[in-house]
Image 1 (cartoon, protein in one colour):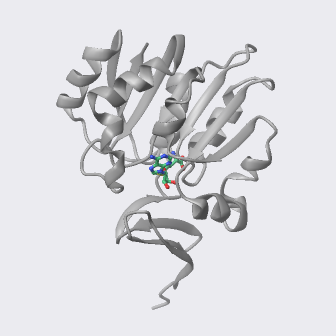
Image 2 (cartoon, protein in one colour):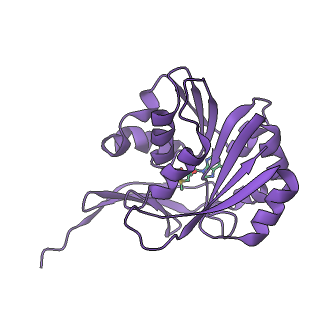
Image 3 (cartoon, helix red, strand yellow):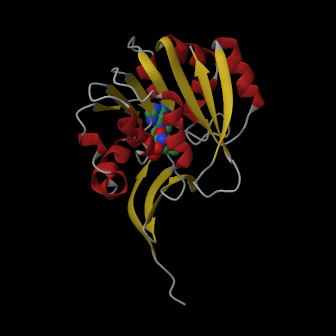
Length: 221
Ligand SMILES: C[S@@+](CC[C@H](N)C(=O)[O-])C[C@H]1O[C@@H](n2cnc3c(N)ncnc32)[C@H](O)[C@@H]1O
């Protein structure tokens, strides 16, 4: 039997002190934090769907905030949908993810960070949303949200104040999408207290998946 090897491409430590590992196996890339799989190139459908739910394919310039970068599937889909004069701010907590996208992941989604519409900020997306800038679209895929979390510090994003901060960072008619590993009816209730319209949309992990294992929460300002 020919067992394909798993290669560790890079390792680092998260702000919570957990080991972050980027691995390659059989042509696919995998990211784990503290041994917990955070994402892989085998399952990226829901990351793309979240962009399709919120970004209008339009000639009109849009300002989009993405948190975080991950492997860039959401960013790539946003770039396909928005106009040439749109602006996309990507908030990424970990320098390693930015470096690894440039060093190892170019073959996965292309050199997205070189697109002139994109600016990457090494910063917590929560802080960027508090910074006074307004966006037409905010796409939040930072964790296995809202619970259990990979980065403990992300809990505030899903609490009432975090939701209000996201709403305040939206332009009129703006929309936010939260990626989640769970349907989480409690989170829908919380969203409804802050946003004018809320939808929980089941999403597939990969195109041929039989089940909808993830949930995308779409909320309108
Ligand atoms: C699941 S991945 C995102 C996947 C991405 N949607 C894609 O298409 O590849 C989560 C990313 O968010 C980053 N992250 C986690 N917490 C963050 C935060 N508070 N602000 C910004 N980035 C964060 C992680 O380092 C990681 O790169």
